[in-house]
Length: 537
Picture 1 (cartoon, helix red, strand yellow):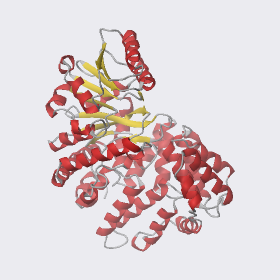
Picture 2 (cartoon, rainbow, N blue to C red; picture 1 turned 45 degrees about the vertical axis):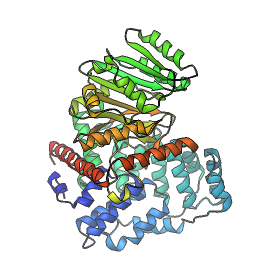
Picture 3 (cartoon, helix red, strand yellow; picture 1 turned 90 degrees about the vertical axis):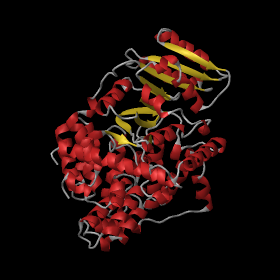
Picture 4 (spheres, helix red, strand yellow; picture 1 turned 180 degrees about the vertical axis):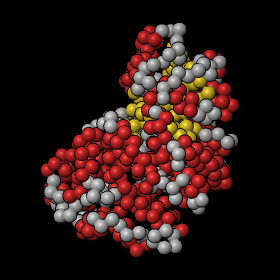
């Protein structure tokens, strides 16, 4: 398998999850199991794919003894592993010693401070136990703050035979913390002692982030050719050839930026400050105060004074009508209907200055898309991805538990999704529509009030009609409120989100969701193979 045409020959149940991406341990293990189900001997293509995916899963948390155990249990069905990995695998499993007591269970269910205190305390007691190193690694990944791991690694004692794994973890912490050149130095020296596929991929990313484009691009191409079933590598290569990072274009026509808020004056002030500082061009702004009782109206008035009343206006409602109704109210304003583009933004974000031209670049690349969106990252820990490209869960049987995939939530941002491509849905945190198509698709469904999944339902309705969204991976928007699978909220908000997901699952038949998935299979495959051909593959 070395060319774009070879992808088409893969079985559909394997091709579908591969097209979604080769990241996220849960997804990688599930896809590896599918590949092994097609394997007839340990050296065929399917076993090669399975081995690569399982090694990648281990690399996503090098301290995860469960990943190591899964790999060891499958070795009889996989091609022979590179020599250095076998003793390392044995050592990793030997040092994986789960220690769960009522006290640790209680602490790990507590606040982030309680969790970190528990983990670091356990590591002081048992510094060679990978079980607690694994939990520290996951804690840092989920919180978006890698300093606790860096501190522990500097003072920790490496178990015998696992030095390369600890060095790899140290390099990962450096890379997501902005120290790409230092990370590259470590990755480069791990080439022979830790032959995991992610080591070379991360080295390529480190070269690219440190400005060594030739070395990074060359190594990324080597990675793609040795792992041709990995779409993310080809997509990133294409963006390097097309200079997607610098593809900034003004939107042609009249643009309206739309926002709504309820009792979040402090967050809204930060959002509107970033909006005012951004490259708005001739765009106009309409902001809806959804019945707020705090200082929201005053925050909006200050923004209007700043940008001019000829460009911005306040719509004030006496009560909170919820997110779907607020969106519908705004999109049906006469001045919005007269526009060419309408962009909705959340009220707790920080927009980068070039957010609108970056969306313009995505529009220029995919002018026929129904909506264009961004990568949403944690406000205080931007290496933590909250949302990005969304596609339906590959296996129809699993959609009752998780309708949409969570690939981007399963790993930190190591650049693996730095590309622009179609998807089924993008987050409503920042998304752009052609005004005419927004109105054609119909209003946001009021059943999803007060909030959660009204944007997803609208996108899925679009996919069912043959359309698609586009993810702009070079637009990272910092977002305060964590949503979806990473949400920290509980009580009524969590219950409301769960109830709205049940409504969404009940609105469509299983056959409808599968029809959406098949449509996206074709769109994703056509997009990927076209880019591979453009790269000469």
